[in-house]
Image (cartoon, rainbow, N blue to C red):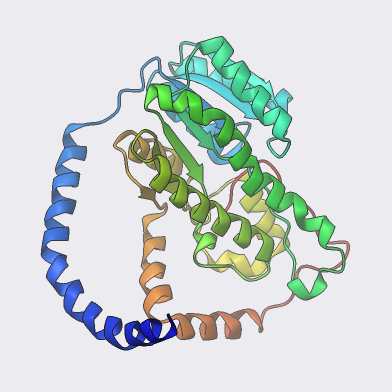
Amino acid sequence: MSAISNILNVVLPPLSLIILPIIMLPYLFFKLLIHLKKLVYKENMARKVVLITGAASGIGEQLAYEYARRGARLSLVDIKKENLAAVAKMARSLGSPDVIVIGADVSNIQESKRYVDETVDHFEQLDHLVNNAGIAIPTLIEDCSDITKYTPVIDVNFWGAVHGTLHAIPHLKKSKGRIIVIASTCGWFPLPRSSFYNASKAALISFFETLRIELGWCIGITIVTPGFIKTELALKAYEERPSLKMIPMGSAFECAKDIVKSACRGDMYVTNPSWVKVLFPFKVFYPELVDWVQQHIFRLLPNPCKKGNRHMYKNNQRA
């Protein structure tokens, strides 16, 4: 086997340089057909059922309003149930024919099962599951004296999405529905001093890409990788880390509009603001340069993550 591996090491790199240009034209034609199909088909959300976690504020709140404008029935979930009443009222005024609110901690597997069950019991179906709930705790890795302080980031951002998804899969199979997962640009372009947040979002991307391979024939999956979006969570991050102010914020309203539009036409990925996509080829083709630039920028910046100045940003979504 080692001999075969050695042969592949020698043969495959130059062979790939030949194969890639050959398949480029057929691939572009295939992409064109997909694009034309998306121009014709757009999912009608009228009276379809959408479950949104982290719906009390930020991107989740704006997603509720965007789905409401399209006439969807909504199940709004958040750990802060008291904040959902105003969102539900606004969603009804925008056109949603039926809205329920559910208080739940997505990191708890029993509560995740409960909010999925309550949604299906009420509406008797589920068409879109939006995994949006997320938190962040800024820190330098070298300051992590107690790692248990940061486990909630993984529990909410990653396991919170997994729990709800696993319980929702049987219902989404019946409706040929869709999962929308709010990951982050930080999942593939990590931001310093956000190591656990970055890791949780990278895990989300990998998990749902794998799930798409396994279940893509019956459940659509749209992975969202926002940049910095103007939400309560992002604004708090700006306050605590002035260095982030060099990164322009996008609009939560425009982000939600882009997400729902992309989900309804069946896109695999959506990035908002769209300029963030420019970072991807740099990361792929010039990784050493990207690392060098980031290291030299952030090592010159003051460390805002001092003891007594750390807190958790909850239930919104940032990059």
